[in-house]
Image (cartoon, rainbow, N blue to C red; front, side):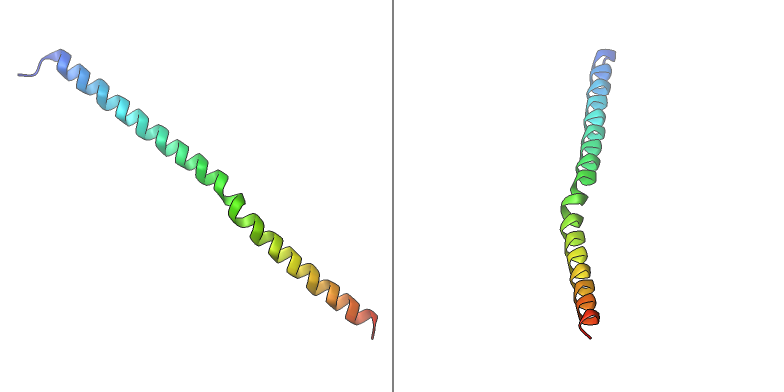
Length: 65
């Protein structure tokens, strides 16, 4: 037979697990938000470098013709 104190303990334990799950979700969201610069910064640098090279070549070509 389950006593009130057992129910309160299980309820408290369940609440602690839920709080831990919420904390884990917040942590993963924070880590995901911090992760995108690591991925997109090299891509942006490559795109800007390629664009600058194209404009430099076009400017050089137009200047010498």
